[in-house]
Image (tube, rainbow, N blue to C red; front, side):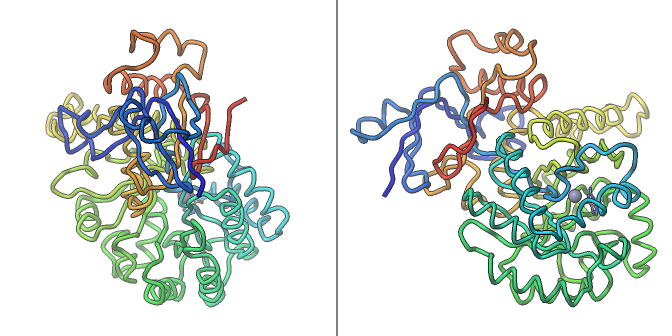
Length: 465
Ligand code: GUN
Ligand code: ZN
């Protein structure tokens, strides 16, 4: 058995900060001088160094100094084959897919191209502190194979699957529903729960799926109920209108996925920008999750996701955060938090009643405010809950997988260190509040330059510089 120790300053979560209104620090756990003991990649214990070190004489300890050690970030929605096309100019969702995305993704039929793109994808994730993602691939099985193979080489926990589309894409890109079913079965049998791989049945989006494709997805979920379901939902107004024309029997976007029995635990819909209150309520009741992708929602002009609605305690929806790279123009979940905060603030310009007094809603406005506790919970334990993987990772509980990031709170633009020095007096943060202030500085003034080291299953896979 391999046993290693990590000494440093640890910050993780034991609960959802939205449940601790006015006292969010109660959801966090902070250990200024801590020790994490890792056995074969799994956390054996994590707590104060002074209390634990005596019990582990002879343990080989790596001391990570002047860093905040947080759980590895979870990207709940990202596209592997868009790595190269990130940040493409000038279009909203539907024309952007046609102009930029399908021509790039079709290259992933070629195994060598898929392998290179996938390697670059995982390099970019690790440099961003992201240790787990739920990913889209393409219609080509080789792209999904390369995704799971590369994740396995790095021993990273991932969710992904063959990404089906049989209409509303160019002929050179679409595949048939029958091929999708056959290839999905083969990939599930080969990869699902092999190593750290988890399989998501992945209809790309309802608009790209014929009735036959949706029925095959329904069949796959019945045949493999342990699998996840990953798709897009209610992202762009033109898309929503076109979809409802195709499904006149459905009242709304969620209704299309419901019609085929896909909505429930382990279902994720990316974006959800235009979900109605009733759709939020139905998602909440079914245990389905929405993935908030603010970089993408802003970059593609899709709209402002209503965080304060999704977090309404009367109809709370499970929620992960995602980059949606290349719809999102960044790989970093730190950038996602930056944009997420600003979306909440823009929502509140309406909710404070100054534009229209009848829209005033102080409670929803409060929930829109992305404090550092809410933010970092959302990309760690909360993101894991959204994806139903919190039994495996998301915080530093014994038994969980030892994936973590060492953040340099001064790593970023030249202006950052002096700003951060407002937040603590000693050599580093000594209280949970000081640590949270530094995290807020990282997400609003800093960026992925704060990611100094990324560790996966107790092994360091990335070191800055
Ligand atoms: N809807 C269908 N495909 C995509 C995609 O690749 N990106 C985004 N943002 N939305 C989609
Ligand atoms: Zn997407």
